[in-house]
Length: 157
Image 1 (cartoon, helix red, strand yellow):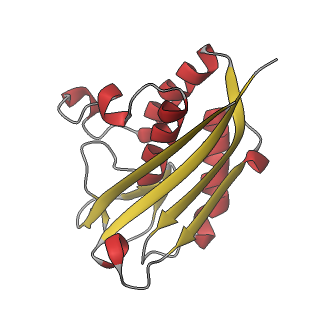
Image 2: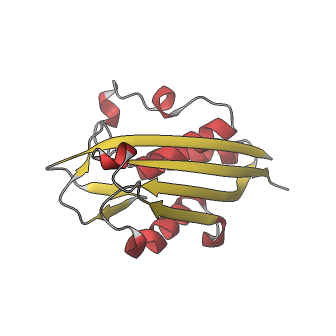
C-alpha cells in the first residue's frame, strides 16, 4: 500500500470558466492558472504522484511549457494514473475536500465523483469528495479555492 497527499489553490478571476473535478461549474468567476486550474484534479494528481514518490504536478507538467496552456486537467490525471497502473497499483480509496465560499458545490459532487471514478477506472464508492467553506476566512475568504486530497494505492493481485 502507498499513501499520498495533495494540495492545490488558485485565485478566482473574471472571464474564465470554473472547472472543478473535471466539471464546468456555473459561476461568474473561474480559477487563474496555466492549465484549466482545476484545483481538485490538481490535488488528486499530487496525491497520486506523492504516493508513488514521483515529485509533484509542476515537475511533470510545468507552467513554463506552452504545451500545458489551458490543458484539460482530466487528461493530466489520466497520464499520472497510467504511471500508477504501470507500477501495478489500483485505487484503494480517495478522500478530497474542496474549500470555497462560492459556488455551492453540493449539487455537483456526485457528477465530480463519477468523472473521477471514470478517469481512475474505479468504483465510485472508493471516491469521497466533500466541500466546505472557511466562513469568510483563509484562502477561500480572500477570493480563492483550495483542495486537499488523500489517496490510498494498493498493489494489484
